[in-house]
Image (cartoon, rainbow, N blue to C red; front, side, top):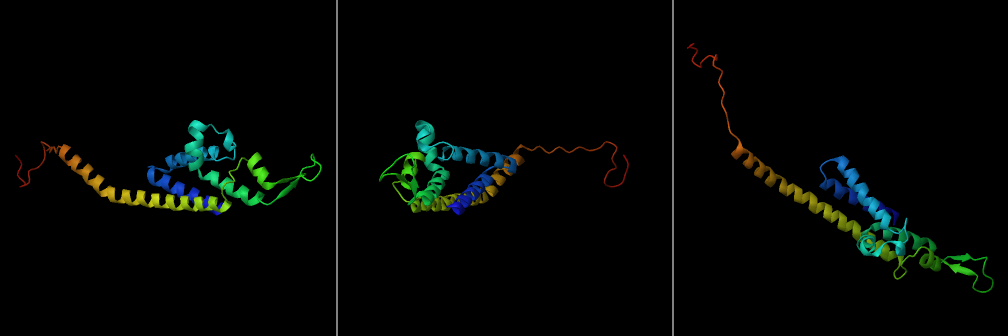
Length: 174
């Protein structure tokens, strides 16, 4: 899951760098995208606390941080039992699944392997999108260049300026 997160950040920054004109705008744009994804990914703010109208439904499920957080937490907490000293008797233990659903608000309807499959699918999608952007720019560059040069030639006016004291080509002084 950590390696797929690394690959996704790399793929996202490759897409950003293929779109923006210079590296400074790429850093700013990439940091902005990463910041929004981190905010709605469920780590800084729990999923049920994210405002539903705008932030949760499009961004929470598109942000790969959601699936990274869920996959890592499911990997670490599933199958564990924690001692609860406040409760006596048979039910004095809290399971990892209860911690995931009640405290971390993780969706337990699917396994950690589904989270990993979603992350791998996003890697493939981002890399294919990067390929399309690069190939599209490669094919459009000559077309745009020829359009700009043809527009530039039609609007250019050539002015010949001769010096009045210049020597004529045949060497005679007038």
